[in-house]
Image (cartoon, rainbow, N blue to C red; front, side, top):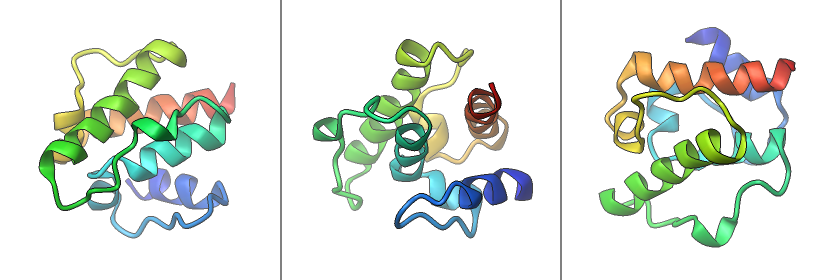
Length: 106
């Protein structure tokens, strides 16, 4: 997990510094910012909700990040939903981050 955390931090994304990978990805904000850094203009920020106290909005943000990965970036995201990221399911969350890493290296 340290490798993924360091990779995200090395991207130089404004207002993003990951200390604890699973905890910091839970609300979808960091994932969306990473996606936007890798492919500018991919994220429609009007669909993002900054209501971080509402689980429904947090799940919507994570679902949106997963949907972008599947539909717009054509990443291999199978059997993973936003709720898995919110619930910090390690293998599934790491799968999403790994796919983003692969996109970066292509």
